[in-house]
Image (cartoon, rainbow, N blue to C red):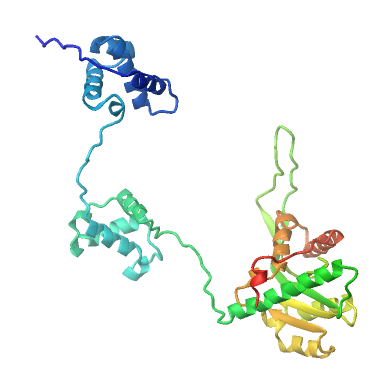
Length: 382
């Protein structure tokens, strides 16, 4: 016959009782802590393992273990799980280091047709070659274990993050030159805003670039409009038809916000010269036209230089952004705005319709010109 289980005396202070009541009624505490708090409070009222177990729907031994631990370690400590040391790791630190160093190499360097590792391929390679490298613990390596090891070192060999190497040795000097032009724009704006100040020389500063490859895409079936309560969005057939691409040549006057633009099939020297002709007719003959642009071949070609040479000295002046420094050119902000508004989801029936809609968009923006301003690092320009 089993020995009679004697009740254990459990003493709880007023502060501990209030704390246990708060935990027992909590909706955010872990369920295990809530259950143990209820056990201790119920045992305080009725010191019987069986009675508390039946009241809470638990085994009496569960109640007994909780109460015994509360007596030995304290009621608050009895609410938390005991820490378990767990099993000794079977994969050594040296094996993990070997695996991580392997992941930092490309799979193709080890004879695989893959460019980069997949975790499955890396696990298989480690199982085959790990024991020969002195890491017998990798003989049964699982793919999930590979993922855990790589996550510990924050290594993701299956992903690629792109960067842009700075290849222009004169990047800083060219950037300072562009920023100096923006400082000149700031001075021109102040002069234009003050009626008492007169400009000594008329200057127009144009931020220019091309946006090539704008696709003229047509639908093969009509778009279906939204239907309230049924279809919340426009519905479009997946199939489409291509009509080719066009290039937008655009420059924004940094003082007035006026946009000058042409839409052409290509953007060679002859198209760039046509844009310069557009600027030449848009400004008085005594105005110096200063362009900020990149060093595309059309901008520095023999044809372009020959055309500029036919005009008075100082009529056209170019300031080139450094290589991979297009972010310095304010016209890129306008192109982003155009892509997010006019070109977003655009569909046309022909290339000519795309051209017409782009020119109409330029006219729309020119109705309320936005003056673009460069502020970052302007005061640090040389």
